[in-house]
Image 1 (cartoon, rainbow, N blue to C red):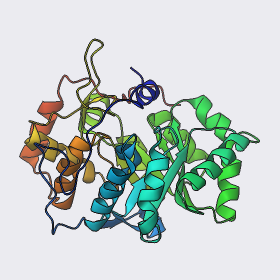
Image 2: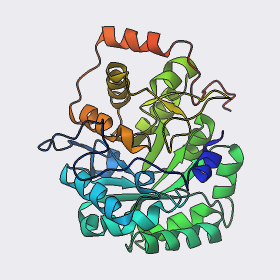
Image 3: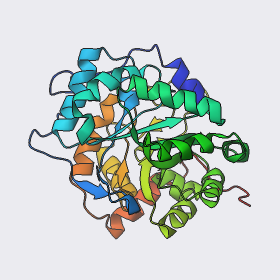
Image 4: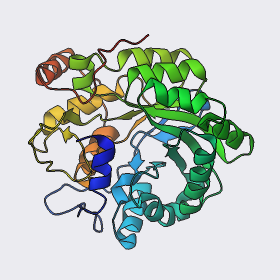
Length: 323
């Protein structure tokens, strides 16, 4: 199942939600006194929490619970929030929940529109939904093909909206999210973006050769690097049922805590500022505890991680004809 189809198909599905100080029965709770450390976002100088709050977490959640989820995250030092119009009703839920903390937060949004008019309309709608007059970061969402990049940079393309919005103060920084090395490299050749949001995952890295080239290019101009899929494990099999709501891939299973910790630490060691964990709330506390207590990956752990990745089908593959 493709990612876009998956998000649409789960829009009405039941999900696990936080309640009070816990996520749901059977999960650990965040240590009450643990505050998430922060890292500098490349050349922007902004300091972001090492763990980001993905807006998909509050998709289809009752507003009171969404409010509690955001308040709880903010109280534990989370100041980086990311959302997109494609995440069902996430903007409508996250907007009111984040409103009390907006001035102290770094808010990122995206658009999947590739034309100037469509991007402008979506930007205005997102600003309204999020109850704010500006975004800290606005991103081209999910650029995947050469055509995506060409359309965004063509006359009357989305990038015209992006550049004008920055001049007008509606956005502070510009970036993109990509699930293709080729698209990411093309975009960086066309424009000196402030940030990239990209899958940095151990299976993709070791089994798909996916990630190293993009990070190398981004670091040349000190772009802020934001990571996706740090806790992803592999693609779903054709006849496999997804056990985790809001994930179109198979995350590292809950019982594999040790490997999840090493894998997530590996992601952070690639020079990223912050990572966004899987959209299913069941993984939030796992990601929080790892990100709040980072330590270097040892040589033995790295070898163990390579063996764990061996033979798995990566969510993304870098073995493509780049240029």
